[in-house]
Image 1 (cartoon, rainbow, N blue to C red):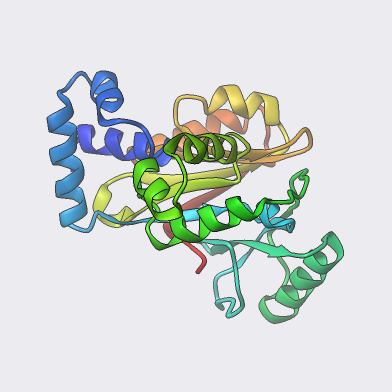
Image 2 (image 1 turned 90 degrees about the vertical axis):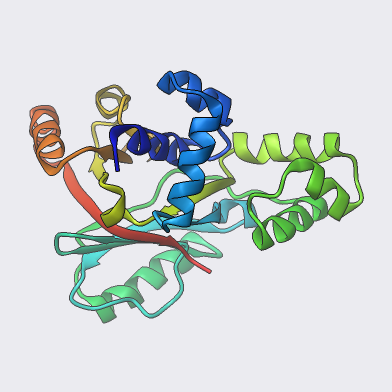
Amino acid sequence: MDEVNKKIIFYLMKDFRYSQRKIAKELNISPPAVNYRVERMTKDKIIKRVALYVNPNFYGKYHGYVSFPNVKEWKGEYVFKVNCIEHLNVYEVEADSMEALKSKIDDMIADLGEPEMIYFPEQTPYNPSIFDMKLLSVLKENPTMTPVELSERLKVSSKTVRRHLRYLYKKEFIRLVPIVDINSSGIIMYAVFTKKVEIAKKFFQSTMFREVSDKNAGVFVNVGNSIQEVSDKIKKFREFDPEAQLMIAESYDVGS
């Protein structure tokens, strides 16, 4: 894995819908070179698959994040899970109400022990249309379907599909997530939980590909090239927030 491949992975994690032309322009290489590298990384199982992440708010549900010592795995359902190389597993879980969500986390605590972190972002549940539900049902079968393919499957115009997709992506109800073999990729994927949200947004701007935050706290997910690079960056950030929590991922996956 060279630096170009690492940067391609970063852009795909940031937004898998980035066109190869846009990535090529950012990296000053040709679009066919980007295509070849992506195909090669897919063939070599560095990019294992592409999953569709659906924000539970889309279904009118609530979600939160909780981390536990990884001495034991949670056997229940989750929306997203990250196995960390330290002593943590991080789970995103959902429920029909905030009360039910807190009750679910209480069940996890009873099974897994005291959590290292609990975070409930500010959120507003959505009431999806019947068409939106049909659209997501088809996307789950094949997350990389094009708007034209989706329109043919749903028997509507591609303009209608694009309009709905734009809205869902803009509201961050859905996201395409490349599932990368981190150990083979050579990248370091890490998250920082902090209450210094505005500082973190600026500090991690160049390395961050995912952010879940509100005015009170946030989780900022980044890509680094080495443990030393990540260590140096976190030391600098802790000058602003000594209580910032670092989580370095070993693997991750979207719940079924």
